[in-house]
Amino acid sequence: MRDSSMEEGPVGKRGTLRSVRADLMTGVTYMIPFVTIAGVFQAVGYTLGQSTTIGGDLGTLPWYAVTVGSIALNAMVPVLGGFVAYAVADRPGLAPGFALTAMIQDPRLVQTTGTLLGVNTGDAQAGYLGALVVGLLAGVVTRQAAEWDAPTAIRPLLPVLVVPVGVTALLAPVVLTFGVPLALTMNYVELLLRGASLPVLVLVGGTLGAMMALDLGGPVNKVAYVFAVGLLPELLFRPMAAVMVAGMVPPLGLAASHLLAPSRYSDADPGQKRAATVAGLSFVTEGALAYTTRTAGRSSLSCVAGGAVGGAASMALGVTMPAPHGGLLVVPLANDPLAFLGCIALGAATTAVTATVRRPKIDTPRAPQGE
Image 1 (tube, rainbow, N blue to C red):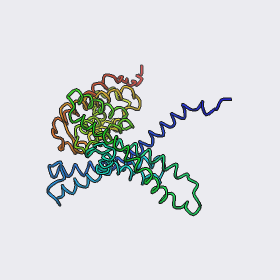
Image 2 (cartoon, rainbow, N blue to C red):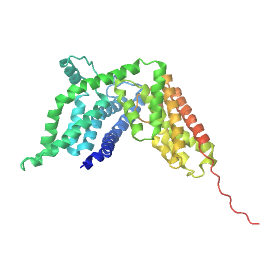
Image 3 (cartoon, one colour):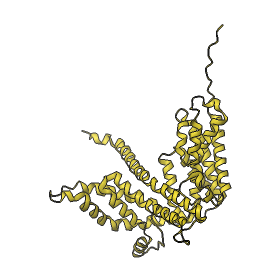
Image 4 (cartoon, helix red, strand yellow):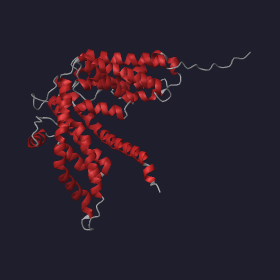
């Protein structure tokens, strides 16, 4: 007799993949407010201080603002790992996920562990890649530990003491050990981007731009965004500029198409283009979603084309953006504000033209005329 569970294997695998994706997206969702805080405070500080460093001018308002933003930015990766673990194991997983992720973001711990293993890691950190891996690992182990049939006297201490401390102590050496190759991987990516040729930069920018516009705020969009934000502490600002450009393109491009060809949008709310424009200028890619409800295929392809063009142009021109959010507010922080705006305009124009050509003209029924 066949085991029925064998027949359900593929379904179980798909369910597991969906669960893992949901857990990762939970971490990203909780991380986003920290990114927003970092972006707003750093944007204000850089604008007031006309500087992209927190050194000098101690005690001034720009220094305070940039410092607060930097603290939020540094907390971003441990928060990501902590809430991935939280999504897997609920509240008991939060502290181990946060603490273990923070460990592999400490260059001293990673470098010391690397020395013991005979590897020179320099000042490399495991970054967001390490946060995702450690968060899942901490969550799975915590969930298993929480199911321990402990004695009645110890049971109340499981979620607040025994499990968090025990899991952290158990996984600390494991996490530090595989944190070394993760840190080296992130270091390799950084070196590759620093010394990349123009074709490689264009390819990276186009890929990031297409990812930002593919699902308009969905998982693929978040992966590209987290990748760019994770490089900010390493002073790699080109990917962030490409991602922000591409994230602003879809709502602006579709709003422009709506404005230029209203006959093709007679089924849309007249105020939709205004809302999309505000969203685009604010770097809220989801502002384009209202245009994709009825013509998803056509609009999505137009958004991807514009995002890819805008992102590729931004990387090719060497535009940098030190702030992780802010949209139009942080344009002065770009090394070349005109080039930054030009890339947005180029990407939006690509989306507008493509969307207008591909979107069918909707004929409004005429009112019957009397004989």
